Image 1 (cartoon, rainbow, N blue to C red):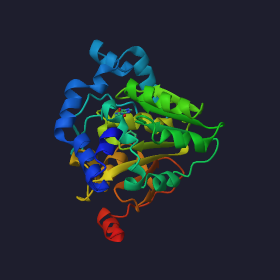
Image 2: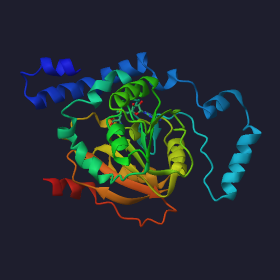
Image 3: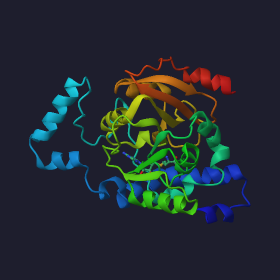
Length: 301
Ligand SMILES: C[S@@+](CC[C@H](N)C(=O)[O-])C[C@H]1O[C@@H](n2cnc3c(N)ncnc32)[C@H](O)[C@@H]1O
């Protein structure tokens, strides 16, 4: 892809970018990924999927876990099948690892102002952070640098190939505080109550099991831990991304509130994306009201 970009260097940069975006987000490209590269389904089933396909009732351990969760005032783990839509939103398919070069294209920072988003994460040394849906590690590597040797970055993806590319990139810069985790489509396999900040960039809208993922994410957060969610703005038709890969603020609020989260911070100055911070609804962090998207667009003019 880099070579493609270079060979198109006679085109204005915006045209090259538009071409690349169309290539990666055209329905044909997506169909090819899902038909030939069923990334999620090639991986081994998560324990709960295996249980779903072989058991007619929950195994005794699962009942005990549900009872324990209820006693501790926790929500029980959702029993969820793969979905096509969720609360009125059609779900996108995971982006294939074949598109990985696009994630680390040199112009990404300029287009999305990624470093500005990154600063908003306010990472400090020693934090335990998670890059969920890490891909080939565009965000993971700077996260590892900022949390330092005392910190940890749990880097989760459902595609082994993405984790392999992440390993290669992180080996080159000699960081050893990154823990790659092969997640399941309904379970990121994170430790309980340890995560200070969990980042999801352009991934949440791809979850086939949004309730199960949000349940696991909520469980992974420490009491003051937050989710930092970056999604392309659906409300802005000028953002050059296919509609299935965008989310509206109202939809994000609907899905997160329904799954035990509250909005605690947001950053509304990015050119293409919403950046919203959610905490558990029982967190001591104060809840805020979102600035309406139309107001955000007006302020950006
Ligand atoms: C569009 S890429 C974004 C990668 C990275 N966050 C970035 O911004 O460069 C989305 C990634 O999320 C991963 N993904 C999709 N569903 C997932 C899930 N349930 N758990 C973990 N990763 C998932 C895909 O495999 C893919 O690597």
